[in-house]
Image (cartoon, rainbow, N blue to C red; front, side, top):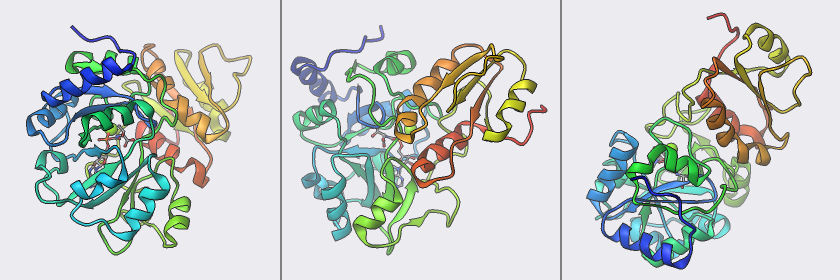
Length: 328
Ligand code: TXA
Ligand code: MG
């Protein structure tokens, strides 16, 4: 039977650690999204993660640590830049890619010679990591390609029968997956935009951040164009065309916008905050909610072209088909 989310008291944390030690999966909150945790040193436990998510083995996992001092247990070398970022950003929504240390298992790295590492900024995640004492590999706790969970309930609904325990830490404060920065080359390279912006990273490192793939939106290996996507057809619509698109889309639609519902509209309308942080915190939960309503379409008003909205633009582009018209 699928477990109900548990209050993360010391007893639940102790049980979670026991389960991790015996190779089981434990879902836990982080400040970004809920993770599907497994002992990062146990190939069998890691195998369970890939099966539960129906995720291809070539997609490597992020190893979560209790603190920056554990970096050298996983990385072959810790460059000065990584030390600097660890000090400034951890615990926090930044994942660093470093050369892996010998002994880090292939199930974590997807067979690459690099490893992704992050210290999450959430009291429950940190309590779990400290008690466990080693790395916990954790992808977002959703099926491959779907929307990341920002509530314990999302995990229970989607992966409940695959996990032994779900720790309930309430809604995730950030709501979008971490920024991923590759530090293995000559120049730091952004693989996934997130709450920690390239501007902040450039200021901290006093060096330019390159974009993977050279310009446009970056790609982490195994990141698919369609990812973070609802099952319902979702379409990104320019601000100025929203009214027209609504008219031509029929009545059984949902709209996500940064303005209030016009009196003439009778479908499902969700108004999200005009501020990127507030918007990010709610977006995934709103997408899930609309996805469950049997709508013909979800129209999403495009968000501003500004650095603070970049991570959101990336996720929205991946969640939607970007179309000029709604003719099909
Ligand atoms: O905020 C987050 O990062 C959340 C929470 C749970 O920490 N985790 C998360 O994990 O988003 P996941 O597995 O859904 O996304 C991890 C991304 C994948 O796109 C993967 O390809 C990339 O990180 N990645 C992992 N290891 C890598 C490596 N060695 N080199 C390049 N990319 C890597
Ligand atoms: Mg994911």
